[in-house]
Each structure stands twice: as C-alpha cells, then as structure tokens.
Length: 477
Image (tube, rainbow, N blue to C red):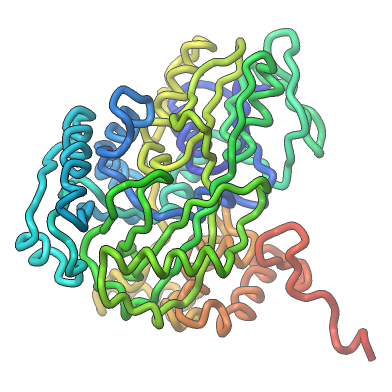
C-alpha cells in the first residue's frame, strides 16, 4: 500500500508532490496524459498575480499572496524562469475610478505589498503604449511573470529526485474506501493507498463526487483564448497590463513573457466539454477587440500562434483544499490565480497529508534542482568550452529559438523526461518560435527515437494517438 497517491500532474499536483517529498513516504503521482503539465498548467497567462484581486478572507486570496511571496526564492532554488516585472490595472474612465480604489483597498487588506494608484503621467512614463483613454492605474510591484512549464517541471523533477514516482498514460476510473485507506481504480489496474490527493484539474469534481457524494461539487471548464506574438513584439509593454476586472474575471491582459514574446488574452467562456481546448473564431475576435482597449497599437500581425486553455471554475469562486473524507484530500477548483498560488498550495496539501498520516521528516530531502542548461546564457568562451566537451551543444536544431541538440538530449533523459515533440518543446522551446516547429520537427523526432531507442513511427506529437508517421511511401507502393 502506498502512503500517498496524487491524481494529476499539473502544477498543483507537482507542487504537492515536491512538498510531500520533504517527508518519509511512498508517493505516486498518476496522470492520464503522457507527461507532466498537459492540462491547465500548460495553457494559461503565465502570470504571478500580486494578490489584490481575490476576495478578502478567501483561501484564494491567502494562498495567492503567500505563493507570490515564495516565488523569487523558489525560482532560485529550483532554477526556473521568473521575473518580477510588476503589474498595472488600467482604469479607462473617471467613472470607474471608485472600482480602482476598491481594488487597491482589497489588495491592502489581502496583504499585498507596495500597492499604489498612479496617475496618467506616471502611467505613460511606465507604459508608453498605454491607451489614450487611460486615466490612472493600480501599480503592483510584486506582480511577475513565470514559465509555467518550467515551474511545473521543476516541482516534478525535484519531487522525483526525492523519491516520488510518476506514472503517466493512466486514467483514474474510480475511488473507493478500503481498510486503512483508499483503492484507486485505473485503466491500468488498481492501487491501494493510505491517502489520496485529488489534484485532477477540470476533472477534480468527478473524483470529489465519488469520495463525498453527499456534498457534490461542480467544476465548469472555462475556456480562455490567447494570441502569442513573436519576439519582435516582446517589448511592446514592459509590465503585465490588466484592465479593471469585470463579471468574468480580470479581462484581457497584455504581458511580456519570460522568453521575450508578447501574450494577449484570455477570454472567459464557459463550456461543457472538459477537453474543449480548441480556439474559436469568435473567441479570438473577442481577444482582438478587448486587447486594444488598454494598450494601443498592438502589433497583432506578429502573431505566431493562438491557443486555448481551460480553467477549473467552481461557481463559489474559491479554492477547495481540505480533507473531505478520511484520507481523501481535495485540491480542487484551482483556477486563476492557481499558478501564482502553487507554492503555497503545495505546502498546504503536504501539511494536511503529513498530519493525517503522522509522517516523519525526510532527513535526506534536497530542495534544489538544476534546470536545462541554455548555452545562450553563457559567455562566448564558456560556450566554446561547452561545445568542445560536448559537441551536441554546437548543433542548432531549432533555428527560431536557437535550441541545441544538447538541450534536447538533456530534456529527454531527465526524470520525468520528454517523450514527445510537445514534451521537448515545453522543456526547451524547440518548436515554439516563429515557424512553429515547421523546420525542426523531423530532427527532434530523430533525436527522440535515437535516445529512447524507439522506431521513428512511435514518436508522437503529444502522446496517445497523436501519431506523426502513419505509414511510408514504400508500403503504399
């Protein structure tokens, strides 16, 4: 019998796994996809929210502020990309100024540091491309941006380093209480555990309702459409620029990314299908229309891709983290600001589990992790020496993002490591540039096949049935 099974390998599940690895326990993470970070955690705004928006007194507000405070030190400890660029909430009319004041006061109550309302002159000096209609803004210096893939992989790799096991391509089909814990049924057999952590994203309500049918939960998938713009547009804004929140949340934002792109979005469209991550013409048109309200002259012609993600929205609009049945801990309804809150969410879940199971501290716990080496960060001399020692770092595979063969090999051999084109892309950015993998895909496939000792036809875009090679011309002849 395992001590803990975590269902879901998104940022919340991986953060919980990492924090639980501080204790002496047998921990297993299950996910229905082929890799870490395949759900909400891969498709979001990549924002570290300061914490001024969530309702005062909510769990969401407390964990957002705590997660944001932990982020700078955590980024150094786990070596992932993070930048505290600050955020601005732009007020576009004098009539809306009271709402801006309310947001400021809510943030102060939540404990957000450094908040202040700035007037138009200072705002324009900070953001020259702000709308001509902008009259004032809420400035939050503790706001930031992060690589959501990098952060999730960092949690997972550090958890694995400290003994956590990961199992992918495993769909949970049911849970039932048994003597001493729970039995988790999957399409690959059943597993017994003393404690379950339900971090299943948009599916968390399904598992919650199995464990606590008398207290049902409903999670509504809320789709967000985005545009990603090229590096040439990356400095159009210097900070994350929000509009005053409306009925469906924070509205469309414009933000730089830690990798030098510009991100615009999202929409907030409730859907029924928990897998409906397709963009729509209407959704993208809404982003276009709304994005120009706070930021002028957006170079939308520099768009290199569009995408959509689903948030796990619960109508009460709060996080639900707690033991809902003996040995069953919910980590549910983790929508925005879930990414920002992840460090605090992981700590809270680990504390609940450790107390429930009376776990002892792990004296061998190592809190550090080293990320994939990016040769572009080295000096000319250091890079030359690296290539001399390992010539794979001298082979550019992805021209758009200057990703080398050495980085891709590193990504494949990590634990958990890349097993698909998307797994390589999210870890190294090979395929994320202007040509969107049009040039480098065949070479990345060859490297994956070689390093994993698989036939080229077994390499997929994102696991499962996402085959790229479905036959050969010779077979047809």
